[in-house]
Each structure stands twice: as C-alpha cells, then as structure tokens.
Length: 284
Length: 262
Ligand SMILES: Nc1ncnc2c1ncn2[C@@H]1O[C@H](COP(=O)(O)OP(=O)(O)O)[C@@H](O)[C@H]1O
Ligand SMILES: [Mg+2]
Image (tube, rainbow over all chains, first blue to last red; front, side, top):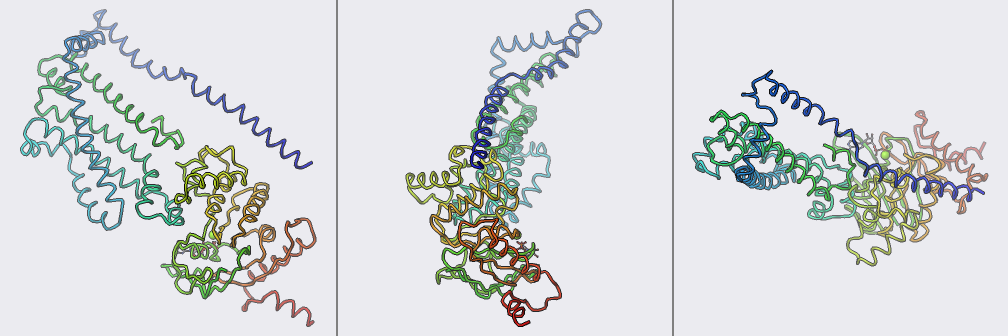
C-alpha cells in the first residue's frame, strides 16, 4: 500500500517535471517584447529633436538632428574612412587588452596563490593603482614615442588593474569548504588549482575581464586624444577642431556600438566556461 | 580497526575542543557520536579525516598512524559540498581520477543506481533538492571504497521523510563493502536506527561521557519495543551528560549496578 503510494507520488512528480520542462524552454524561446520599451525614450527624444529642427524651432547647428548624424556616419562609411578608423581603434584596444589582461591574470594569480607573495606584490600594485592612469601619458610618450607603442601601453595599464584586482580577489574568496573537498581527495597543489581553484574563479574572472575591456575602450579615447592621425578618437578631435558636431556624435555612436559588440563577443566566448552558474548574472 | 588514543585538540584561541578521547571502532562497526553542539564532534571527525592536526594523541587505522588525509578515510560533511561546475556524475567520480574510464563509469553508475539518481546523472547540483544533493555527496564518498567513512550530521538539514529514506540509502551502500562508519548526529532516533554503538559526548572540554551498545538485529523495526528501549537508554545517558551537578561521568553500567544493589 505504502509502496504503491510512494511510487504514485514519484510518477506524478516526474509527470509534473515533464510538464514543466517544455514550458520553461518555451519561455526561453519566446521573445520578450518588453525589451522594446527601453528603446522608446531615446527614439522619442530623437524624433522630437528632428521635428524641432525641421520646423525651424531650433537651429541644430551645435546639436545636429539624428538625420544629419546618420548622414555623417553614412558618408564616412561610404568613403571607407570609417572602417580605417574603426580598425585602428579596435586594433589598439585589442592589443592593449591582451597585454593588460594577460599580465593582470598572471599577477592576480601570483598574488592570490599565497600570503607571502601577496604581501610582496600587492602594496606596490595598490600604490601604482592610486595614480590616475592618464598621468602616465607624458612618461609613456617620452619612453615609447608618440606612435602606437605609447597608446597600447596606456590601454594595457587601464586594463591591467581591474583584471588584477578581480582575479586576486576571486582566488581569495574561493569557498574554503570546496578546497577542503580537494584536500580530502589528496589533490596535489597543481591538481587543486586545476580542478577546484580555476573553475571556482572563472565566473569572477569573466566579470573582471569585462570591466577591463570597458576600461580599455575608455583609455583608447584618451590615447587617441594625444596626437593620432587615425582612429575614432581622432574623429572626435578632428570634429571639434573643424567644428563638425555631427562627426563627433557619429564617432560617439560608433564607439558605443563597438564597445557593446566587443563586450557581447567576450560574453559569448566565455559562456561555455561558466554555463554551470545560475543565470542571474548573464543579464548584466 | 580505528583507534583513537588520548586524542586532544586545543584551538589557537585556547578553546579546548577535545580532551583525552579514547575510542576504538571495529571493522564494519557503525558508531554514532551523539551530543549537543559544541561537544567537539565536528572537530573529532576533522582530526580523523586529516583536515586538522591534533594537539596530542594518535589516530591509528589498522595499526597505521594517520597524519593527514588518507585514501582509506572518506568524509561526508554537514553540507553536500558538491562542486557546482561538475555534473552529478562528475561529482561522484571526483575521487576516481586514478582509475580507467571504464572502471570509473561502472562504479559511478552503480552508485547512482544505489542512491536512485540514475536519471539525474547529467544534471547540475543546483538542479537537485537538498536530499538529492546529500545523496550525491554520500555516493562520492562511497565510490572510493573507504575502510572508514565519517559522516558529520549529514541529514540534519533534511525533513523527517527524506531523512528516513536517506537512512535506507546509506545502509544499502554500507551493506556492499561494510566500511567502519563514524556518524555524528544529535538525533537519538537516527543513532538508534543506524548505529551498533552510541558514544555520548560532553562539552567544555569535549570528552566521551558514556558508551552504549545497541545490539538490535537489522533491519530495525522502529515501532518495536526493543527500539523504544534503546532510544530511552540513549536519552537517559544524554540527560545525565547534561546534568551539571554530575561531577564524575556516571556510566550506564554503574547506574544499573546501583539500581540492582538497592
Ligand atoms: N576553528 C576553530 N577555532 C576555534 N574554536 C573552534 C574552531 N572550531 C570549533 N571551535 C570550538 O570548538 C568547540 C567544538 O566545536 P565543534 O567540533 O564544531 O562542535 P560540534 O560539532 O560538536 O558542535 C566549540 O566550542 C567551538 O566553538
Ligand atoms: Mg558540528
């Protein structure tokens, strides 16, 4: 009797699970139209401004209407000029990001690996972090010249600190209880790092890399302000000197798209590594 | 045979968690450590598991002095402590890396079958209920075929129904290789259901107050008179251990002798 009842309870549980599973999948597949709400405000403002300029309520010389911004973007794209600038900027960010991220990961791992190493490294790095990175610019120019090397160095410095802090912090905050599981199974130091520490820090490492990439895009602008003949930052400076606000806004839009694209790509590439995580963070 | 000799542990802050523990557990015996919180039960298991060092005394397994984690000693913690990035299958296989793929697969699948989670092999731990997670943790400890298995209140966070079914799963796994089991619990029913011997502990400093053998035949009938009797005996011992006026540990044997004399 009881056996019957429990087996019935089991099967009804499984039945419920079977019913719940497809509805969950459907939910994921169905497009959430409320996402479009977010577009409403900027589009409304853009249309209002466009109308105001069209009907002569505003001049639109300093704040050009959307149509003129897109015209500027279009003409830049048509001549191929835009792509040269985009590629130059992307190359700088990517190179600086790789250098900054790799050194950040190495130093973060060193500093997280042991108390002694951390006491040795961390104070110096924290002190360096207190220096506003832009303050390095004159020195980098003296050391590395005004061309690519000094720009990449500035971006690398900008990327380094969030990655270093993120990795070191992630290693320090790994759950001691999980590390003990490794001890119980007598893992060597190397195996412990590989089988427990590495997977445990991956989610925070991805977040650190993302904020590093964000800073990379911030610093590429600063780097391109300091005398460049190519790049989206150059378009900004050029637009200011030539009095072309539409070009400035076009470059800003290009920056926004590029930054978002690079971030999404990073999330996509690292997703298989952190699939096991609860999905709350993926929406960030 | 697991032997604890004059085992003591004083933490760095001066807390005397254990003082002069002497206990020997036969091969295949199930011993339950019972006592209120702060008796040093967890400390004792951590010493045997080699996760902490004792301040004095020795731990021997079949004559071999234990110092640090040993392949023949497995432990199940109070929390499941599954690795969230590994599937259920991979979690159970965690301690089997040295084995060939076939042997590993066979052992894990057998264990999964034993704990009734075969169809959940590919899921993440976060998709399991608390009871299911704890079953996976028990399977992870069992598949390495330890000769000593330590369990630290593994069922305390679960409801009574889940706990009862987990007792059966545990005994089912135990039947196969019959390891020595040291089970920490604060649940008298649980101790009498599972153990051959109950060891009652006392706090400040943590020490053994009394030992009672529970020689009931298995499987145990929880509604029977013998079971009730055993529960009462353990409760009495616990009562005496909590009584602060009791200067000397008064053992069950002595109490019975006194009763006879009167
Ligand atoms: N790491 C530690 N440092 C200092 N004191 C501890 C530590 N762990 C446990 N204790 C103390 O040792 C005593 C026994 O703790 P514990 O072994 O956890 O008891 P139980 O598992 O029986 O509840 C308690 O008084 C507790 O506060
Ligand atoms: Mg405890």
